[in-house]
Length: 267
Figure 1 (tube, rainbow, N blue to C red):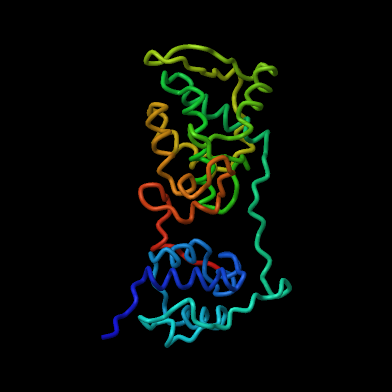
Figure 2: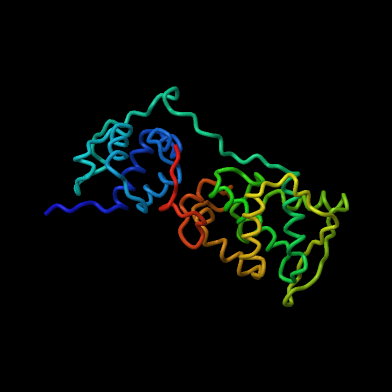
């Protein structure tokens, strides 16, 4: 007796056929005229496809609707999956982060302005606050806040340029580095010596940073590190490698800050 494939099975089939076709999620999203986060949710089996979207996908990915919806569908079968020539693939918006040192410094001053007085906020907590601010902003707006690069290291994600920026700002008398203890452990803290320049910060950027600070700035270094280790960008990355911002579109609750089901989709 035949059964209807689950939403998750259909999403997995879409993902595999897309990869065989040589398309990125962004390529496919633009061709089908829905958003890239929606493609990510479809491939995860967390969003339904309507018949018009399914028909478009069948033309783009080269599959038969009858076979695709069959419970005995196999990706080992022969399908029209020729890789499209580069000239036919829609140009994907470059999503590689471009580090903005000036903005990074201002974000650091802003975080310290709000959090430096809290005894738990040392170097580890600051690094994680940066991580969630950067990745949450990318999830919401598909734009980079500071353009910082993060790597999967044993102690958790932190901006690669954090130490060099702190050293530069300390030399320029913008920050003061303080060695202290917190709960019996050595701690490095930073005190701001000047105000952040908020003129160069968008209201949307400030809002995301504020929400991260409100949620996490009272957490201990261990608590915020453990939380970051459960976030999909961290989980899906390899040890020692850079963490891809695009992985935010695979987040589940409570990490995802965007309701994809209610998303107002735009091509």
